[in-house]
Length: 146
Image (cartoon, rainbow, N blue to C red; front, side, top):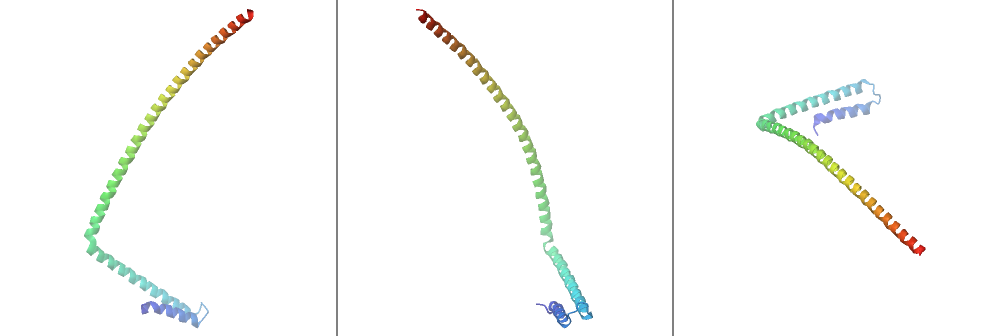
């Protein structure tokens, strides 16, 4: 651990042990010292980060520019593919709707045709049954008369 970083903690610990009243001048001074040293550490850290950024730009600037160009190119390509895919999906959706409507109309026509054929067949069988029944009744009545 760095001695500069441990000093504010030691000062804060000593000040807290020495006087339990938080409003005393010793505690306020210790808090100011801690705040100042924290502020200095942040400033140093930010300077180190900016120095690292400059070094990174010097070492990898060309590669970063190349990556940025490639990324933008890929993004444009993906957007174009996305638009083409949406267009194709919409076209397929229209085709599917049209095909479904045509199939349902054909199915409805076939069902109506089959229902009509069944009705005609039932009427035909019903006439035949009535004729057969009437012939049977006539034959029975003739036998009863004899």
